[in-house]
Image (tube, rainbow, N blue to C red; front, top):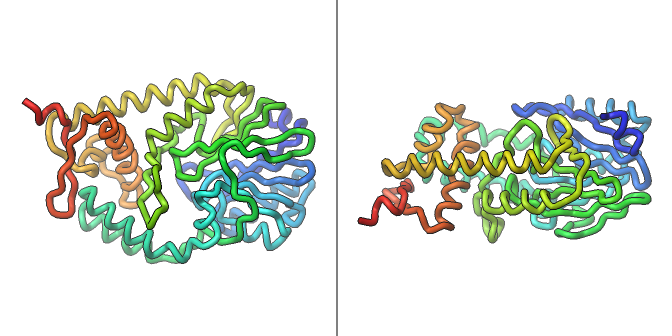
Length: 331
């Protein structure tokens, strides 16, 4: 299948990442302007694997003319400054994450404090919070900062040789997630929105200033899945793992998965009052302190959905929020 991609002028470059998902799939569009979709985290091993992949395709870092960032997680854009400094490439991303790409450091401390408060409110034990507190004191080395030349919106068209890429804003896994659709080739670059063997985690955006807006992770994610489901696609190119040949079947299985998860959570809070952390433990067991956020994030995404359906009761006891199924409180 990779040979078929190369014939279409697309090179898949595996870029090293230290995260559990493993390497990211960066995609080089080998025509004018030479375009890189995602670039990997800001690590020497990642840079080496990116440079090796470019060399195999007959190019170097200095040849890149355009970088498109699919979303704001560091394994997808950390090397962007290195690419720009080497090549003068133009940077594209969704407009809602422009400030983060350009100046994450000014937001870092506020985000860190909001993150720790979020864990406390979710009922995470102090020992785990302290572990996270110490870890987040480390330098934010996987990211870098650079100016964004082209902030994107849903529906934008990016000229691409004889074809074009249409931007689909697909929030859910993250606030600024985008997919890129080439209608002429019936190809979709999915970022982390759609992965073949992994359920993309709907990620809660912890509000810092006005960063969240109207974002609701799972609700937005399901809407985004339906948006992509309507497209005529012969091949979807994800940012991790294998290529996808039947996107509609995969999307149907993801929607079914989230319905089952919602049913599980509904059952749990119909029996007793629970914190988000307690629900997460019942679903996923004891997670490493640095993975606790992912479990809680998925739980809260489903609780948001229940709240939207007016089925959820929540109450604060001190700093901690507890949840109960509303029907169990009404005689």
